[in-house]
Image 1 (cartoon, rainbow, N blue to C red):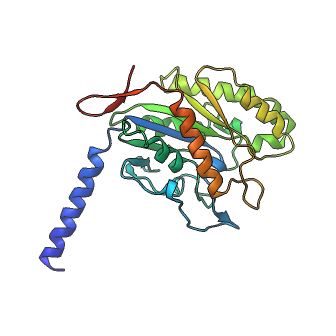
Image 2 (cartoon, rainbow, N blue to C red):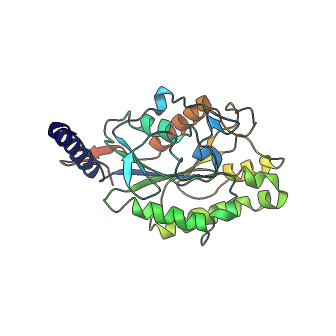
Image 3 (cartoon, rainbow, N blue to C red):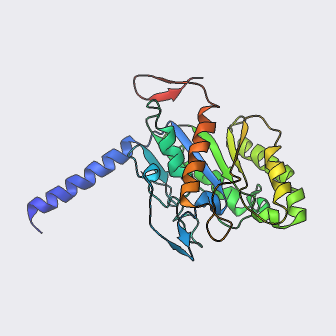
Length: 270
């Protein structure tokens, strides 16, 4: 290898590290949690992702992702590839959400924290479980370089719609999960934007009623019913995930104060 090539490689590496470091002070951090439709199965057919990334989900230097190793990198689909490792991940709502939010130039940087794992029921997300502990761990790690968690985006419940017992207990367990998470993150009014199911088992109506009837402050519900599904009848298609991401962004932007700027970064007003 020539000396010029080595210098160029080293300079490239140094610039990448510098760019990464300068972007770690995320003002706008979002947790993505739940099961497979949040992790993303758009474009996945028979266990294979088609690799198609729509324009709304393309990478953006202002969108970062917290990896499984707790480092920030530029976000790219599939967002959950190193988190939901037992299944093939495709397009989810996260990138479409982030790109839609960034249409407001006051944001600057969005940090996404993927935590969703497919085929999980609400009990597996209760305080003390592995998934809950990992969610809290990753959420706290995302704050090490500054910033603030702006919202939890939550899409889960298909697994609970398969059992009458699980469906009937869903509302209480979901509300407790939200309250516990707010307590453990020391954010008592953390906004939660949840998704009402588009698909599920024979008791989906009970779970949807629970989701639409959550009686907690700062909890918004976005309805996914009617969005197109993959041939498996469970997972949202890629176009459906794009539409859902935009709906989540709209819901978020309607629930927060107008952002203001200072000399160093863009922040939400108190």
